[in-house]
Amino acid sequence: MIKKLLLLPLTLVLFLPVSSLYSQQSENINTHDLFKNSGEIYFAFDIGSPQELEVLTRIISISNVTGNQVFAYANRKEFQEFVELGYSYTLLPHPGSLLTEDQLRPPGSGKGPSTMWNYYPSYQEYLDFMNGFAASYPDICKVVPIGTSIQGRELIAVKISDNVDEPEAEPEFFYTSSIHGDELTGYVLMLHLIDYLLSNYGTDARITNLVDNIEIYINPLANPDGTYWGGNNSVNQAKRYNANWVDLNRNYPDPEDGPHPDGNQWQTETVAFMAFADSNHFVMGANFHGGAEVFNYPWDTWSKLAADDTWWKFVGREYVDTVYLHSFGGYFSGFNNGISNGYQWYTISGGRQDYMNYWHSDREVTLEISDIKLIPASQLLNHWEYNYRSLLNYIEQASYGIQGIVTDSVTGQPLIAEIFIPGHDMDNSHVFTKLPSGYYSRLLWEGTYDVRFSAVGYFPKMIYNVNVSNWTTTNLDVKLVPLNVGSMEPGCKRAAMVYPNPSNGLIDLYLPEQGITDAEVECFNMNGKRLLLRHLNISDEASFVRLNMGNLAPGLYLVKLTTSNASYSDRIIIR
Ligand SMILES: [Zn+2]
Image 1 (spheres, rainbow, N blue to C red):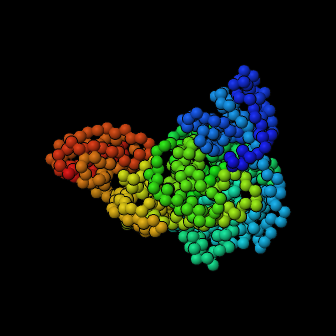
Image 2: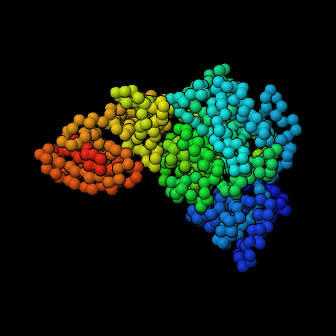
Image 3: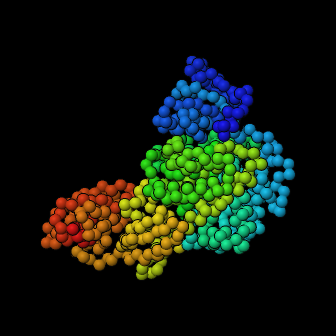
């Protein structure tokens, strides 16, 4: 995109005087002209050091950073704040308005047995395609509502699965495109992908396997108001923001910056997609963008690496290396051979990638698949050819790692259980089972892991030395034993609360009730002498408290935990 812009005749690029010249004048007059025709503008400026991005990313919507050059969007309020910082900027033509109608929809496009997916459809055609998929393949496809946009357009996905009406003991996978309404390569590629999966089911063994073993959800258009801002007949004049001029990919709760990092209320679209994430159990996915070519993996908000950083690089490499085998002309050649840690590129706050990873135990990546945000329709089939094998590989990865069912050992009932890998999991990388099946999936880079299964009212269970290989499914069903209510001490319930056991003194004390905020822990030797008494203040939703008992002599001890409801006891061996 950058190269292309530099080739534009200079007359198309409107240079404004540096903002310092304007600062004494009314900024309202200035911005009134700028925002006369549209609620968002696109511009570029230079920074002195990458640290400046930490501030800038919370004021305007940065869409690319190359060296010290920043490309960004802003609405009027954001731009007023930006201007006060005193940067010189260059206004650029809006990326959603650079193509002619013929370039968006070449005469003769769409001809073929169904459609060739070589043009940008109208809004009504989009709806017709989505409903047509479900009507043509009712056994494996249905339209799933997500919500409605501010202007009343439909937010929808298709679900593709065998037994499409049943919740199954399978991983759920979610592709969503074009949350930025002017980044539309993924929009048409997702329609093409739906068509490809449906029309090859039952004849292509690999596709059949994917559909039989994964519940695949695909939403081609996440911000229809932005995309069809110029009218429902064409994507010409597509905008990045929604109808309130808010960047939806800065509007999510952020692990570092709290519920409203952009200072805006959650938009109608954000609320709908958050509810959709709540009512499903996605284990993996991607959201598609344009303006760069990069597999951008978590985190965006902070420099800390994800617990599964090695796995992210593995699936990213697989995506991009496969692209390299089927593309030309330096496609995906920037960054670290096409992949980047999000924060390393440029930090953002309020993105849906971090939201889905942090609050939904999901592995969602940001996939930027064309340097040009709105590519001419004549390039759509090339981009399909470059990407479709990688799109399939990436879905397939959702079926690997450790997976299984967690049940009650007595009744056989499926449980809501937490699956946690001590020494590995952090920043909410642990996962949970889902009901009604009790199914879980823990995607992992190859290696040997100790995995803890726990559920409220059950003894936690450690499974040691679970071997995981790449491109392989490790099945691990687990039965949890209900807490024994028989007394070990008068008035105490017996609970397996301590991990590891035996220990060297540093222990995790697992809380046998949910929502405990304060409690007392005591430790007795076998003669009944109390050696430790500590009052615990427990943060919300903590499932364990770490205690150091390393000053105790090796031996057998009794640990007693007293909450406002009950007392619990467990034996611990200090080595
Ligand atoms: Zn984007």
